[in-house]
Structure formats: C-alpha cells, structure tokens
Image (cartoon, rainbow, N blue to C red; front, side):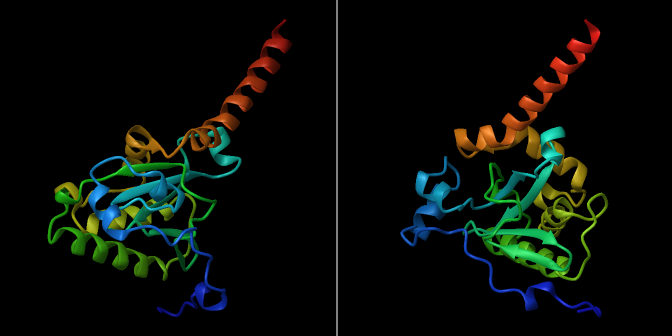
Length: 201
C-alpha cells in the first residue's frame, strides 16, 4: 500500500496473547464496566481499554514513557509495533502492565461497532506508516483511533495528552505488573542518589 511492503507479509503469524480458550466472550462484554476478572487478565483481554507496558531502559529512566496499544470491544490488543506493522494480540515489549478503561458510551456513533471500526481503520492506516519514536509512534496510533471515533466528542487526541492521561488514570493489572513498571526506576534512582551522596561527602 502506497508503495510500501508490509512487514507482516514476511513474518509468521504472532503467537496469540490468549493462553487459554476458556474465556467466555459474553462474560468479557458484561464485565467491561467493572473490574476485570483473573481470567481476563491472564488472557490479556481488556475491552474498551488503552493498554500500556514499559520499554526496557527508556521506561526505567522515564516511567511515564512506554509502549501503548488499544483494545477492541472483545479485548483484542492492537498496537503499532514497528514500521508498517500493527500487531494483534502480541503486544510489543510484552504483556500490558497497565490499562486505562474508557467509556464506550462516550463514542460518537454506534457504540461498540464504531469503536471497533475506528480501531480497525487506525490500524490499517498505521500499517502504511514508518515508525518514528518522537513524532509518529504507538501513542499516535491510539490517538488516531480515538479521533476517528470522536471519543468524548473530541478530535484533539495526541501522543502528549494520551501519555499524561494514561499515566494518571491507568491501573496496574497486578502487583507483579506494578513491580515491573516501577522497580527498575526505583532501583536506578536509589543507585544514582547513593552515588551523588557519596561524592558530596
């Protein structure tokens, strides 16, 4: 498309994030307004959510910076994982550690159908784009999806407000995910503080 070759055409299908086939889709649909069950979290199913996971080294220094994806109404994760490649259920940099649950009632249009169409259209668009860490990245992919569905009656979603709001409103999926997100930063800060104090004595 547009003269670019899709990277996904030369790759084997990614292994699914879903590790069990016992997930009841109807349970997922019913639970999206409440807390996610252990089954949903084990199978990486977060319907109507923006999901986030840390990027090694980068997130250790800047814990509010990481890799972002958006989930369909069934909880399938789509994320801009590299140039001309949008992953499905195999999130770049590993399973999500945080999720920010959005309200499907704030979508302008036919609820779930509009949400899924926007996620699909944004993903198809980003299959045609090169990845740029600072200017056009995974956050931009999610922002396009939210703009297409006019989430919260807005078309001003961008990587900056998404980064800020997901950091504020995001919830950790487990204690292990909390440690994965924050422990490297805390340890690095401790080492740096100790080093500075040692030099000043």
